[in-house]
Image (cartoon, rainbow, N blue to C red; front, side):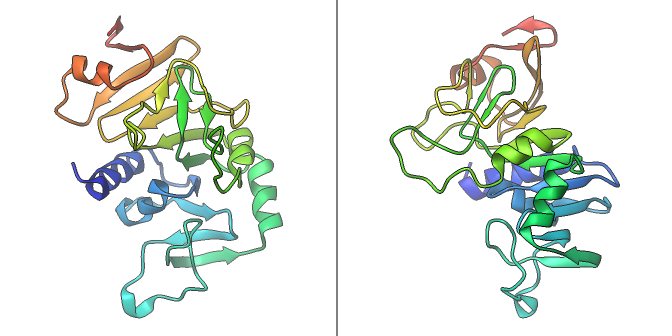
Length: 215
C-alpha cells in the first residue's frame, strides 16, 4: 500500500473513534489528516499552536498561510472557532480539558506507554507538546504506520526510546490493525488489511491477544 493511501486509511479509522462534542487535539503527521474525514461528526478540533475549531483542508483559492495546523499545513476554521496564544493552548491541555489526543509515535509498548519525541543518537525536533498531552488528555489514540522506515515494529514489548511520560495510549491504529491497551497487555480488536494473523504477528514486536487467546 502506498504510504499516503495508508496514512489516509489510518486517519479515516481514527475518525470513527471520535464522538460528537469531543474536544480533540491533533498532533503532527497523520492526525492532521483527520479533519477531512469526519463526515457529519461535530467534534471540536484543537491545534496546540492556538486554535479551537479547526476545519478541513481549504480549497487552494481559500488558503491563508496564517492559518496552519501543527504540521504547518493550511487549515480552515469552523464557525465559532477561537484563536489564542500557546500559553492558553497549554492551559487547556495541562488542565485536563482535552477529551482525546491523537498523536503519532516512534514506539508504543504492550501496555500503551508511548515514546514519541526522541531517538537515542539522532537529532530530531524535540518534545514539543507530547509530554503535556500524554499527561493531560483524557484519552490517547496513536495514529501510526505499523513499522518504522527501517522495517522495525512500532508496537514493542518494551520501549527502547525515551518515554513521553506516565500517560498511556488507549488505542493504536495502524494501516494493518486496531489495538487496545490495558494492564493485561495488548488486544487486537480489528484487522484493517489482508495480512493473516501470523503475518501480523511477524511484523509486531509485542505479544497480543485476539478474541481472548494469545496469538
